[in-house]
Image 1 (cartoon, rainbow, N blue to C red):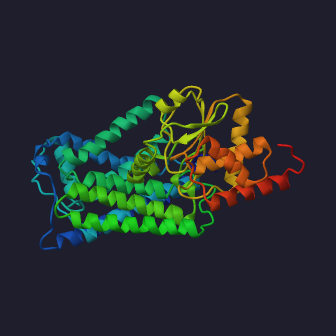
Image 2 (cartoon, rainbow, N blue to C red; image 1 turned 90 degrees about the vertical axis):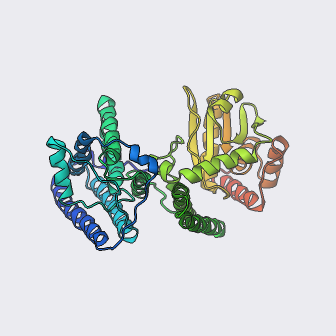
Image 3 (cartoon, helix red, strand yellow; image 1 turned 60 degrees about the vertical axis):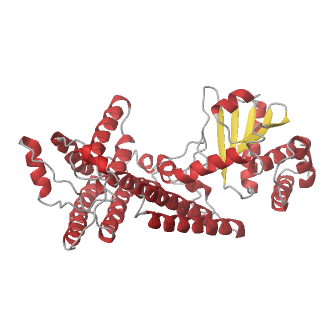
Length: 458
């Protein structure tokens, strides 16, 4: 997937926006305390605010000293405004923080919860910090934990600016902050994953690395699939609501699935595989992996189910195979040292020294465009000249990758008719699922190639 430089990189040579950072920090701070305080006050006016916790949570120890890492997020919050070298990166970071605040406060107001345990007294510095915290923080504003949502956003921001040992120290300290919401008896367990999900959603929706093609050209097929995923999201959401009373863990998982399906529906509505945030080397951005995790897991399991009776790749030419999305073990068994990946929805699972990998992301159940076919075939030509052993893959190896293989065979054999190219492919891989729309797309690509390269003998 082609991308523009990251927002952090774009202004690397420009002067840091110190003044803007100061202004935005002041505004964000005022917004934080006013909106958080409003939600606290509204909850305090209710006669009965419910709570939820697992009985075993009473065994979580109260560790007064962990109030120090708990409080440290405030300092890190302020410092984060001055990390960025460009205005665009700074503004994106602030948008993430504000969006997390808006989502969390909306939840606090709509579904207020109370922390249930009586916190023991603490002495010394921890005691003073707890007293200071109690001056503005009531036992409400529980799920999703805004502390955890902001932690995720700050963790991503600081990790992007640190390397080596400093980065490992960062991970350790931020993990301690995450644990501290429980060991200071500020939050129950359910608040943590819900807060993390909100944080990752903000990172996903507001990426630092912006896709060049944030939207494509939706057609009847992508709109139909968008509606189907949207209906799936609504059904999962309804099931989550129904499950809240009896199985909160199940309700959370269903809510997560609903969010993932809603995001996938948006991707199809935009006809924009780039919003899976999968790079050309097959790596998917962390925000996308976390938010879309239920869908990604389902997509992988689906690929294994439908290919369980025929998991092997098919050789269509010397050192060239077409098959399903590969694991490292499958590549090793095949002997391939290069993968052309046509799936937009599956993060790279295979790696290793010497393995070449290129992703041309195409939405599942859609037909590659002529531009995508050209990118893929050009890559295959390059690897063939280099003498590589290549697997062309998609989720199942029956459609997207198969069409690319047919296009490559047509170029190699000088074929100008899509039907003839597909017939050659089916002799090597009979199980491919290629319909009229695939043949039409291949014919358009062949016609355009003939127009652009007159007299080409391939």
